[in-house]
Length: 183
Image 1 (cartoon, rainbow, N blue to C red):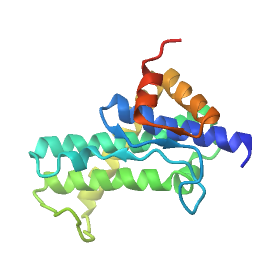
Image 2: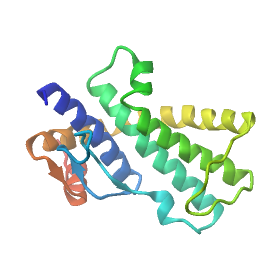
Image 3: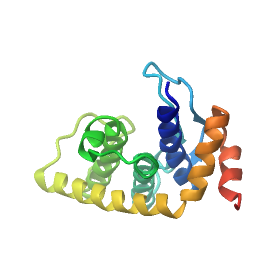
Image 4: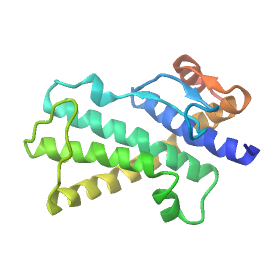
């Protein structure tokens, strides 16, 4: 893998990890080595929504929003580090997983607000046009908010990315220490 691609991946994953920790979401690890068949990096987080499942409605709504912002932080950090010329192409290709996961969180919020209760493994649900409009509104709002979070925490994201480039695996304690570091 090229040095540039490794750096881009490091910033992307650092964005997820730092914003997860800033928002109080656990991070299993941050890795810059092959973690799956696609030979990609990873920053698995401990879902805020999972941690409050079965809780009150407001807690569940807030948790899904938090998870979505963490998902959107990776693309923002990547774009800040190495801007892509065609963001629409990036959204459709390399960021599609992050965006679709955030859209799923938005869909859950819309369904919960509409009084639809889903079990832990929901089947496919068709959203109405009004519900899809609300999902899009939420994604637009969270996209902007996650960009602000990335900007505000850029120095910590940079430190985590640089650490990933020198050692391919960081745990939550490593991420927390790098966030707390002053330079």
